[in-house]
Amino acid sequence: MTLTDFIIRITTATLFGLLIGLERQLTGNVAGIRINVLVCLGSCIFVLFSFQVLPPDLTRVASQIVTGVGFLCSGIIVKDGVSVRGLNTAATIWCTAAIGVLTSSGAFLPAAAATLLLLATNLLLKLLAPRIRPLRYFDEREHYYRLTLVCASAHELRIRSLVINAIRDTKNQLSNLESAQIADGKAEIKATLLTSGIRRDRVVERLIGRLSLDEEVTRVGWEMI
Image (tube, rainbow, N blue to C red; front, side, top):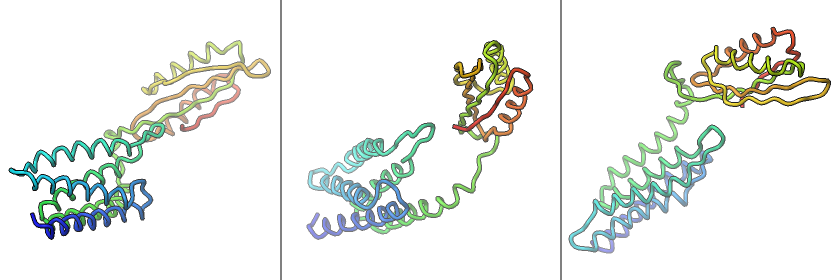
């Protein structure tokens, strides 16, 4: 490979990485211009290095890039409570590496097409995705609700049993149950309810309504956590 070919390919890889990184940075993502340029450029250089040995071992180098970039992407994915952030950015970097590998082979038009498709995916589907709602019976999202009840201390155990049975009847999962003594001979009971699928606000409202009918329950409430 001549020096001119080498310069053209790494320059093209840098340009494609710049375009992808620019979109990431303009949309406020963690991995912006620099990391996408470096991933695309680095992937290209690694594969170009294999041209310097005989016989060239392109597929082996490319497979190692996939592994290495996967390790890099794992550092971008962050678990925040019950949600996970960074998956889209990690997937974008993974695709950026693939475009760098493609550029190293001199396939500039396919690499350009892949770059445009990646940009279109991130920009257009970002607008479309929030409008698509999971079908009720296929929604796997989990929601946590905290129920709070206040009752007379003398009836604490009975009300705890009432809460457990009421949640069991709703076919949802009791994640946590605790109680504490408060002023004026009252006990506060807090139950954490785990649900899956669509938000169960109406189910929780009915559950609270049922519990509030007990004459020893003086205050009830719920919140989504």
